[in-house]
Image (tube, rainbow, N blue to C red):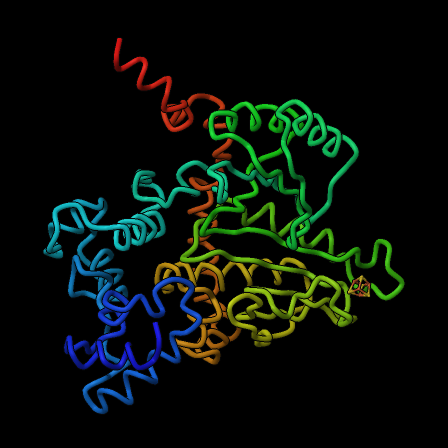
Length: 390
Ligand code: SF4
């Protein structure tokens, strides 16, 4: 839609919020890359009547914003989606595609040992643990810890590709192997074969920890100052399975030459002679942004404690679908440094809560489905229709 049409619609319909403009014009409603432009148009058209700082509601089902909903879930100890909707006076009986995934995440995060994940409230990719493609088939990305693999793993992947006639195999930017063009009903069998070789889900579809990209570091590289590969593997094994407000990508580079591109990741580590420089809040997608420096630490243990605490702070404060760079900008980079770098007690408390939540999160969803979980999801519609007709 052109600028003139958008301003005309804002005036004609009396729109005063970004969500209203999105709903009526579709501008800024898909990838969001033109949001700044749309906000400028709103300021030009509405003048003082447009207040971008006003708290936007989560969706049309409630007048409450994300932060208020999160605060009230904790304060009122609300532990199911129906309880949240009833207690916070939702305007709809079942919520919508915006609020249900957000509520499901907030409850998973706040009550890891009590809340039963409502998989029906997840988007399609998270529901079936694979990435849907434009032709309706799926892609599958097994986890490759720190981007390392082996002959055994590669043989297993090659066998799966042959057996299921997978048309495309692609190396991803996160140092893993993507198999594309798999039929939905074949997913459990593909995962079963991959599981025999020791693979677990790479969560390439998840609002959760994706990859920890690494360079070869001091094991092989003449410039390496520390074991960047080993540290990346350690971080990934510690943090995989965690759900976060939006995807989280990490990287560890063995020296400031930064071959793993750690300075455009959500969390990055640059190894130096004196230790490890921790970075956060980078972006290299719709937005391009270099990271902020959190600080320098001396040991791998300290790296782990700091980045786990940072991610837990983001898990507890981030709004659903808000990437780390947006969350950190909103609350302030110095506030992140104050809570994570300078306040050791608070850092350890964040760390402890993450470790506790991992007890319930580190379950491979692929092996669960191989064992029969949600099996109706993977049965062809034709079979279900036939059974229903009998
Ligand atoms: S980042 Fe440094 S240590 Fe790592 S591969 Fe590049 S030059 Fe080597």
